[in-house]
Amino acid sequence: MPIGEFVMRETLLGLAYPLILSASFVFAAVSCWWRRRQRRRGRLPGDVFPGFYGHRARTSREERVESWMRTAREADRIVLDEYERIAPLYEEPTRSAPVN
Image (cartoon, rainbow, N blue to C red):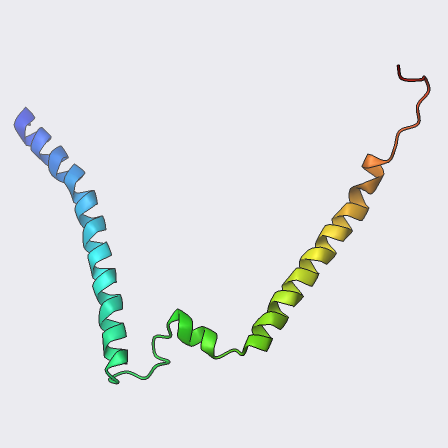
């Protein structure tokens, strides 16, 4: 195999990865834009491709606050349980000799 053919094949292979990544990014961006455009024009119902704000609007503020509070209570319970589990490791040691 001639060296030029090998170099050309390796160069094309090296350029293929950035090209594929760029093409997939462009496809995803255009697809997202197109779906939002169709929904905004009324050609698709709003719940076919729910956006972030549409999803949040389905829950009331009280429900979201209650969910946050449940999460905070659960985290507090986990921390306290773990503290009780490792508390004996941090008890004050008895001193046999005075410290100067």
